[in-house]
Length: 213
Length: 196
Image 1 (cartoon, each protein chain N blue to C red):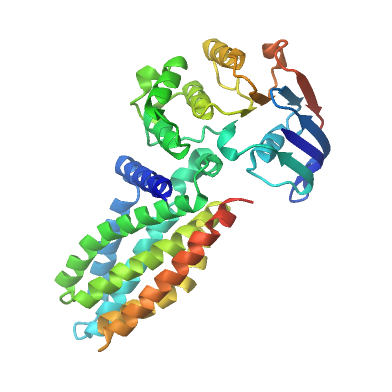
Image 2 (cartoon, rainbow over the protein chains, first blue to last red):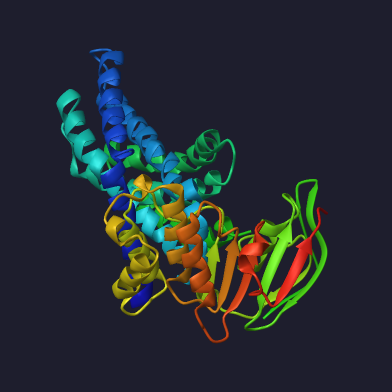
């Protein structure tokens, strides 16, 4: 177990280091999410409700996450590094877990800017919203990393990933918006936690079959 | 160590390997030759387990932690330094004293001065030397080398030949090359592939 966690830590650290050096993903995510919130601010009528604003926030977060997911296996695809990782004797699910953790870190970076921007343009950020976003991050990263690995092997990967990911992300939007707006947010937060649990286990268990023939 | 019977591989409608029988024993040095498209790379990727056969059977009696693979791509991160790349692989292969081993290989392959430079700044030949260092990092029992002389200058080729000469008891080598004359007498057997 210690060895497994050490592999996961080494792989996640490598992803953060690669991003720190290349600065390809996080700056694009930050610009996109702030840009989207500004556009929505001017697109929504002045008398629009908080319901619409919350919906717009979740749309912006979801599409920002797609940016991270589309780029999640770019470094492995270039130079066929994924072959080197597959040949290494570590458990292949460690590759998924390391990548999932790094995607969660990128999402947190983006949301650390997006949520204050939301508070600035729309309305204050509630603890239910923060909890919903945190739980949704886990689901987005779990499913998205698996699908990102699948799409990385395809020719039309930039098209394939959104087509695969968006239908599976619908429950996350339902849970996230519900947690933000409903009178009983605990029910929706529980739903998000259940989604995370189920899809994290499924993705963890099936990653090996996705990256090998 | 490697036993293949009727081994075949298709990519869509294209048959790359067909009906190949092969036995490689521990300690053998097999040289694989053949024209472009004859299936040399496919054979090495099949043995490495990176792709699965579409026909026949292939057995490799070896744990994957004991396999070293050098392909057409260096399998290293361009954003990391050579030392960081070898350190990552050293962790994943659980090599004791991985930093010393990485440093020794970088020095042996003439990359010590570039150890902290970005890998993206390395020339094609230096990348090939780094790829060799990566493949040899864990002192594999089975070494699969696909066109290892590609992009290497004369000095690099000499270093590679020296590594092949280095006495590692029981190490099995499968090497594909368009330049078999460079290996003069080293291989113990030879497989000439023809386009399927």
